[in-house]
Amino acid sequence: MAEQRQPLITLLTDFGTTDYYVGAMKGAIISINPGVEIVDLTHQITAQDIYAGAFTLRCAYDTFPLWTIHVAVVDPGVGSARRPILVMTDRYNFIGPDNGIFSYIYQTENVNRVIHLSSTHYYRQPVSNTFHGRDIFGPCAAWLAKGIEPSKMGEEIKDYTKFTLPQPRVNGTQVQGHVVHVDRFGNCITNLTEREAPSASLSRGLRMMVNNKPIAKFATHFAGAAANELFAYFGSSGFLEIAVPKGSAQRLLEAQRGTEVMLSLVS
Image: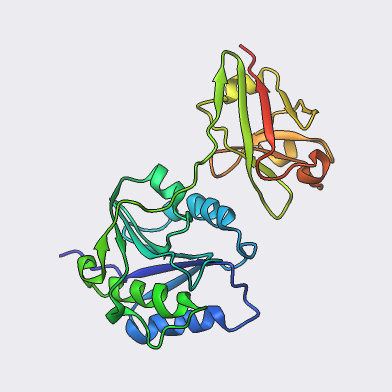
């Protein structure tokens, strides 16, 4: 008989680590389910930046074992009418606010059910108007990890919130994409993958423009470019990224999330 794996919950928030928020959230989880393992995915999402939270979750969630429960709390609408939800897929479960933070999950995973976590029996009481991570999301994840049937936690919904994510456009040899994330190193991550921009084509001669600034170098790693040279490469998340060794591509390109990227493929 196979050994049953210890239940696992990850936490992604914009809480930071200076205040008591992360510790209190973990305390609420462990009080319900002392046997659960908790992994900090990150607590350094820029405050209230739902898009950054959604992208970060998309890049990390499937590195964890199957059936991991991912709790994502970037929640500027806490205390409002926005719903707490459980997203159930073929491989993972996700808990957080219904504010679009799971938009990439809806795109990449086969979603079976989305449940409005409306049964207050599974909340920590009393519920704060400003700290649902501790009082709703964490406790519901703890109960789910304990084996509670999700249907007992609320009703299924179909009208859940999701962003309209920018999609690449390919017109012959011309590819239009966008910067979708800028990391702490100033690397600009685009929404282009090998499907739209094959590395074999890029290796034959990169012709790329961002804010009227050319990127003419394609490499496979940072040592493949000179110091302060703009270059493109496929990063660990599978997206085409732009970087500068020992510098910031964001600063040199004056780019931000949403900046257009134009690419000409070489046949």
